[in-house]
Image 1 (cartoon, one colour):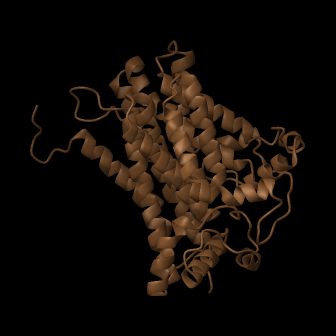
Image 2: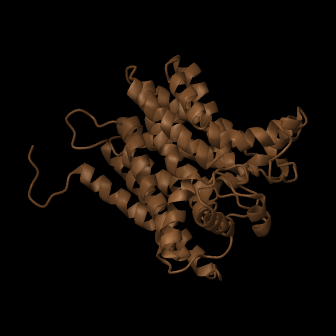
Image 3: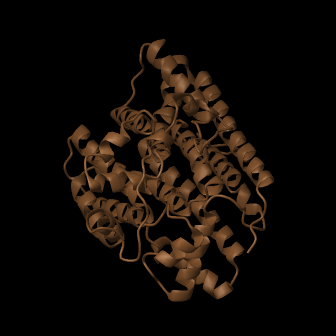
Length: 411
């Protein structure tokens, strides 16, 4: 049926909502300065070193010691080469930061849009998806942990990895859900390698997820893409291997420590906008969707969640368990020197909580379509709009409070 003049389709409505979420997530970038706090000084130091000394793959020990921040000591500079080139040409570090953050947010919403539309494809004969793809995109983009990484902690290496995660998921879903196609395997290898150059811990975690997916779905072909990604990321993993097995970095080293005490307490998962100790919660939008999931499971007779949703729910449960302060990280560190060092590189188990929240976006978004099958379209629309308004509204509040509390950084 042809639409009336001036009437927007459901797909166009979804795109406008995703654009609104992207704008909300970019509010801190609207400031004409760099907010103090976090570890943004480490990114600035690395950027200046690359701009001055050329395309170095890893930062020198002198730069890390100068800023006193070792969180990303084994992560490469590859994703900082282009902004460093812009900074070298313009000489304006604030403008470079604002452009880089803006590009991160825009690519994140684009990657999430691709991934969730592949996970929840359009229904035949409909104008757009059931709303699950749009909801998943907004939940991922406004995830409190992702916003914390981007602006509060200001860990731009991990923020880059969060930008790449949806692209990795999109490429992996294409390999798993469709027929064997070497081109999709190449895309998976490239996306995975890009993640390896951004953040090695998240790279190793995603490799583990993909291996679990191969076993769960019993499809060995994606292993070729995983192996290809490892091979392509090998130069970026060199420093990790040197640290774990060759006694440290060529330029320097940092002290190992335990991380168990830095994990989450169970109640911290359910915070919405206020959190302590760098432990953001699920957020109100995600909590609403998960409540709908529990309603469907225990009151409405279970619903029919797909295998993909069940897989992501299991992966999320595993990562959330690993993020708890009760998880036996100390026992793992005693298993060997290389494990002691590897767990130290994790920094904090909160990293796994972030991965758990990201994985939960899939079953949480699927709750809207399953609720439509149980309670009708009206109930699904109520859940959809409640989650969207909560997610975007909380994102605006969090970003506004962050910019209000943080003073401009002095150079």
